[in-house]
Length: 377
Ligand SMILES: C[S@@+](CC[C@H](N)C(=O)[O-])C[C@H]1O[C@@H](n2cnc3c(N)ncnc32)[C@H](O)[C@@H]1O
Figure 1 (cartoon, rainbow, N blue to C red):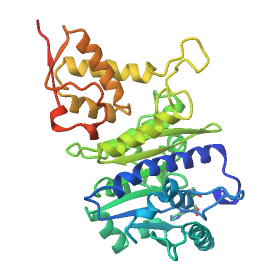
Figure 2: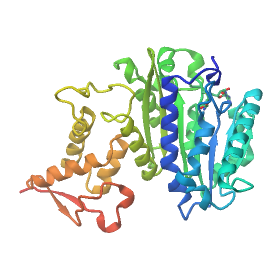
Figure 3: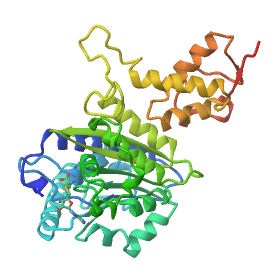
Figure 4: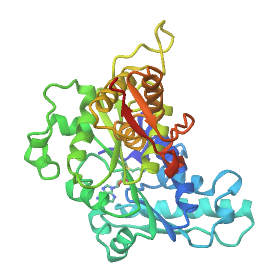
């Protein structure tokens, strides 16, 4: 395996890091401003040495940079040690290099803000991930529902975030996570006993799919590991590098978390919000029929939504908005469809307050939840 920090980050890696950055940038304010979150923990379990050979920031420095906020708006107001970073790297020399890089970063940062000590606490670990995640302090932080956790798992390959680790993460309260996975590799070697040790590939069917769909199929497999009873959201983003497909998978038990992640993904991919390439054969930018509002993915979602409304499966705007989030679509698509159905009065009526400006679940008060009633006349 070539060491990612011993060369310049390639374009696929830069895109991955940009998504980490944007995702964390959206996530942090929600948790630091939450009155029910006592402390915030940010874990980067595969942190690398902090930089590439051109001094481009790797994930740990990116997280630290973003935690400051624009014009130090977060760190200047933060209570000391309310925000804690834990960076881990298994290779000793890389972990030492990482410590040096983070220390230097903080020294430079302190020169600007004039404090003696950074308000953020940070720790550098040098463990194998599977040992680190079961350390008693990590376990107790993961279990603590008063602590908000952001977990970054930038593994090489696929074997570190296995089914067991995934289940542990989705059952930890107030824990959002994002991991990288080499999906082409899982597809190519799905029958190999080595892969089957970590991923139940018998539950994955790549047969009818195009190669470019493999990361979505891998993400669907992870969805099957979540118990049906719990409300949980996963979304994925596929990244092509050469002939191979890699990707990110983000998980959150909270509608706010997934809403934020979808925002990042749809900014990167205006056609499907899920790939660094054309996933659903859409017209491309510059072509005559290019559209960002009625892309193939959005249209397929709206069709599905209409069926669910007309069959009575979706009865309220809250259910419809959650269905959008679970389908990897921004909630505006739900609102557009409901306005369309409402305009054709013969299809649906609304019982309750209809506010066409509110598409975000977190802005929805009790009074804004309405019933969708089928017009049988
Ligand atoms: C993809 S790189 C991470 C790069 C880093 N996120 C960055 O942006 O620079 C994966 C890192 O995880 C380390 N690593 C590999 N296996 C590990 C394990 N089992 N536990 C902890 N670290 C591991 C590797 O040495 C490597 O530095």
